Length: 304
Image 1 (cartoon, rainbow, N blue to C red):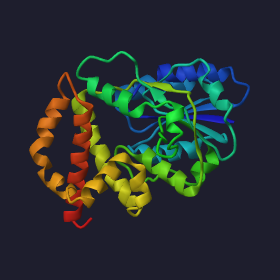
Image 2: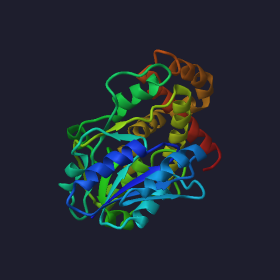
Image 3: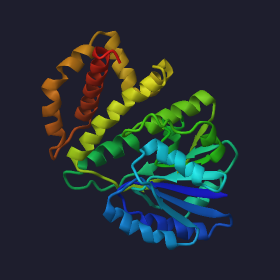
């Protein structure tokens, strides 16, 4: 009845899998764990391969990297049961009743998001920026997420009726890093499929040093603009995403193009400050907005 789907990329998932396996063994319903590796490095594969020997665990490897959207669609197709629980590979179970909590929400046509948390204690520099952004911008209790349920959809920890993904699915044209969940939330909204938010969080363990985190930030902003174009530049999508709303406000005032063209002067010094021991959330927000203005300006200049 429940297929637990874990897309893997360069993360050891032994601890995560063993805890999920333990909890699944105590449930009174059929469960499988689908582990699918998206062409990780050799060392990661070697660590994860032995998990295939566990009962009701199915481990497989893709011959080439297919990206965050396609691998989730593949996991859905490979799954045997009606309900699919997707968990990112860098998550950690924090409750002994994690799976049991989800089984209470198994209903046809339902999409349920459990949320995630970061450790309360800040890490040492240089992972501080990632922790600060994640714990301040991403983490929200269910009550807050329910205010804008489709905008708060995230792929790190959610359960869905498999029929939902067979009807909608993740947009595989968006094959870079980031915002496949933003686009899915939009698709669920357009299809009239409700998203339910509960407090059943996982810990996020995949903190990265500031340089790598900023590199992913740039990729995610590029993907955000690509996702906006995939919607046909739907104003509904623009209103769903805070940074897009801000960008179009600036554009209306004639400031977006100016900020985009002048961003080269201060993106580098701002990035240097963000890599420091005292990063600022406000500077990070400005950094992302400048990236978006630059990408949108370049896209307009290229006729894209």
